[in-house]
Image (tube, rainbow, N blue to C red; front, side):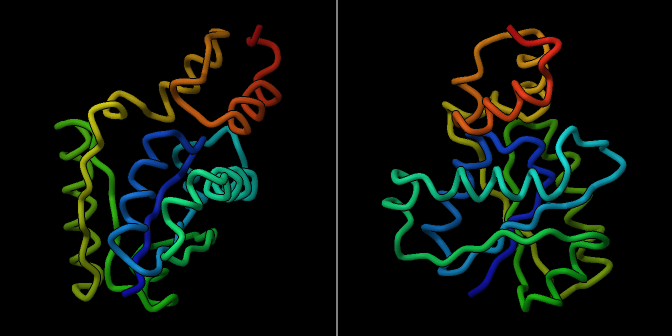
Length: 169
């Protein structure tokens, strides 16, 4: 079964990778769908986010743990359910860190279901070590010049330092 794990991934965090790792253990084929998501005004372009996600997924420890699954990264614009139809997926994966995430994700899941009742959403809850990690928090730590090693992989930390050089130490 092919599933889609959509997100803005601005930037990809250890929380995203935790959900990705578990999705790849559960499903034989996962498409990581990077949303252009203009309303969020990401700091990285969709192409940069897709590249950083690919690099994070290609690390040796990640590959070893998920070697039986196939994955790819694609960029999409528009409705998620339309993208799912295009790639032949009927299931999406969403990560939940806290009750506040659930409210928003619940609304999105039902909106998507109204748009296309053939597409279902599966929620994976963040592990205890990652429930505090978010892209927003990683960007704030980066803006203030803090250590990023608890939030993002090294290539992402490097990209954040280059993107936000005036604020980083």
